[in-house]
Length: 326
Image (cartoon, rainbow, N blue to C red):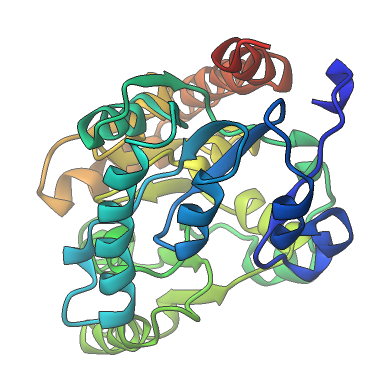
């Protein structure tokens, strides 16, 4: 927006340390906003702040990143289930007050429409691709690079991401395809301690030992190293509002096998093997075929690189400008 000649700021309730100097406290909005300003509210979890923001005298749009269905958290994380239900109810209330709902995917746009938004549009997440131009962490490379098959999934540890099924998939893969295969699960588990503990217990029960590696949250250079050592990216997630890790895999030239859920197929755009099959063996065999057939691997990598063009800075920025009419 600044490049278009607009004065623009980012406001937040909380900000990570690495970007804190680029973000202003959200309370400043209540003192500075004017009727001619555009206010974009990014929504992905219920919070009373949105009700106060919707009452501000400004032009408004809500950017929807989707809310994970609360049923995934029932019995595991009552706090997360509560806020998911609260967020869904709040979204319906905001639909009567905010004139424009922007989904980061068509899947999300349909959810906005179902919630009651009169005007909707699709604008993908604006990705700063330059932040991926980092050298892979040499320690991570040294630890995991080798002839073994490395199955990779990137995403926070959460019930909807179905890391439990990935662990079961690895058990099949090691028994029927490659006994030395490993699974790397990259993503923070801070918010889901009970599910994280269950995953460890499941890995032990299946006799996988050190074959499942829980990396936790990692730096940009470590992330680059995990992608660099990956044979195949495998996603069995059952709810994705956008599926950003698929694009990361494309960026790092890693072929993808994924379950057709939420916005996965839409994000992949034909550049991945996307299956509706429920049998884990089918996903495992698909990953195995990619590892064995270099021609298929290279074809998928090429498709992924071309798919990224739809998410270039220029393409997404133009879509946002069109949606806002500025």
